[in-house]
Amino acid sequence: MLERLDPAAYERIRPLVGSLDYHLAVMSVLAGASRGAVYAVSDDAPRAALIHTGHRWHLGGDPAGFADGLKQLFDEVVYPRGQAAGDFGFMLYPDDHPGWGEVIETALAGRPARRFTRHYYHLTALDHARAAAVPAGMSIHAIDADLLAQTALTGYAELVEELHSERVSVEDFLAHSFGTCAVTGGAIAGMCTSEYNTGTRVEVGINTMEAYQRKGVASALLWAFAQIAFARGVTEIGWHCWSENTPSVGTALKNGFRFVREYPATVAYF
Image (cartoon, rainbow, N blue to C red; front, side, top):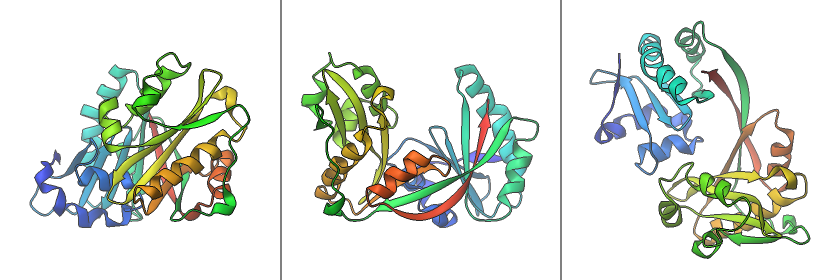
């Protein structure tokens, strides 16, 4: 059976998930910087761990003996709660241990799921030769109290929802995160926010409104975001995307991000 660990026990889990370091969500949960939960087999020397935050579930360590507990947790807790809430499902990200594929299959037996691949890129320095131009008629703003006071902006509700995707409140976002927002004609065209801020690392999330996609908005947002990030002492900006998402891959490479690795993902549907 898997047991939800007290945060005081997180440090003994860290060696089990070291190979998941490129998932800053894992490191952020273990550091107490993000909401989440950690599960392990209920004994004094766990060999594997499950780290949960939002719709992400990360698996690390030696999966031997983990399948039954994982299936019980999914059957008795995760699926009933997700179905009651009307959620779409969740994603499983295992480390490189070859046994995790079989464990995931056992835990999800009889339930709809698909396997995909994802990419991780990172940016460690600005390349000023790649500076992105701001599209005509548009302005890029830091997401701060002044911007958030403009409640009449079209798309304002979507912006606030994005800020709440990781932080418990707008005030929490302003205190611990940062981002940029594109505005044109009284409307929000897109937003770019830091995620899982831990130490001198962040991950980035970009959301461009449908009407403004493929117009250079994402690159302009990202360039402004990177300037703010490195000015704040960030040393690495991480970017995760689906390997088949050609526009996302293209935006990362166009703005100087370097490919780090490909990794597996299983999407389980409620």
